[in-house]
Amino acid sequence: MSFTSIVKNEVSKIDVNDIEKVSELSAIVVAGAELKEDIKLVTENSSIARRIYNLFKDLFQINCVITMRKGYNYQKKQLYILQVKNRTSEVLNDLGLMDKGNILPKPKEYILADEEEVRSFIRGVFLMTGSINDPKTSRYHLEFLVDTAEVGDLIKELLNRFNLNAKMIRRDNKYMVYMKEAEKIGDFLRVINAYNAVMYYEDIRIYRDHKNMTNRLNNCEQANVDRLVQTANNQLEDIELINEKVGLDILDEKEQIVAIYRLKYRDVSLAELGEIISVETQKPITKSGVYHRFKKISEIANKIRENS
Image (cartoon, rainbow, N blue to C red; front, side):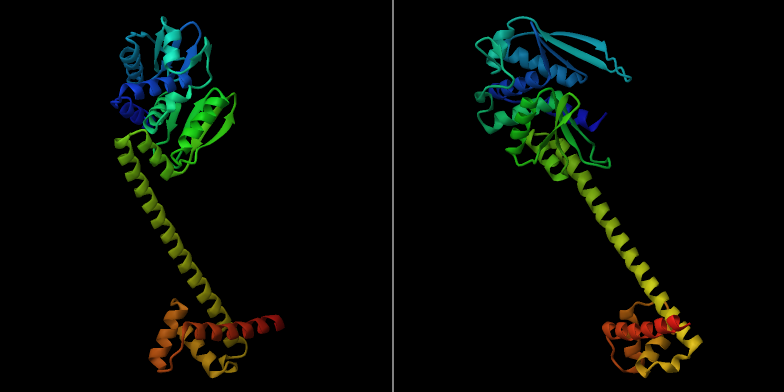
């Protein structure tokens, strides 16, 4: 079962009061209904079908006509088709979707009068058009795919009341409202009261973030090791070139010391080489001091290369 289905199964079982049921059902109709002489809704999820059936029954004492058939896509999933064939004008009026006999593109303001109604509306839209990636996958993504820009703008505006940074783009002949920030998607699950999904999502997100941080630290550490090895090899090449061409006596005493110790300790860092020299010669030298002496050695080696 997909993570989207898990979340939808959870929120389709949430208990809400009648006012919140109106907002949720209004969203379901706005986002997913075909409105002609009847109200027709189609879903692949049996929990959502049951939720819709119960909402119509609780609010209007209407028993939806339910039919089932196989889908036409390659997976041929079971489709649940729910139809309200009577009292459609009354239903649409009460859901804030009709005014003076005309069907409205989005609900009237009283459907979204307070925060809990907004949460219910967002939950209803998610049930019909929402999709969310499992946090175990390589990217975080939540989307709503709707038919009109008006509905898309409404969904985006409602989500952003909760500071979720939702955005909208045109996709073919539809409109997609989407979110890609992991933290914001977790906040969205809280908005629709999907608390079990929140716990799962945050556990996976924290694990992934920790794993990514560990990988970054390991990569950084490996890069540091690679740089250290390359630096030491370059210094050894310079020292060996000078020794072969003119001898190390050309170096002054301080430069000779770091050259000799580099030949002796080939794999240590500049800081470690400075500590070793300080202990063994009783003449303190810092990492910076070691670096500057090797810089002079490099300049001498480069002059030898230029004259060769």
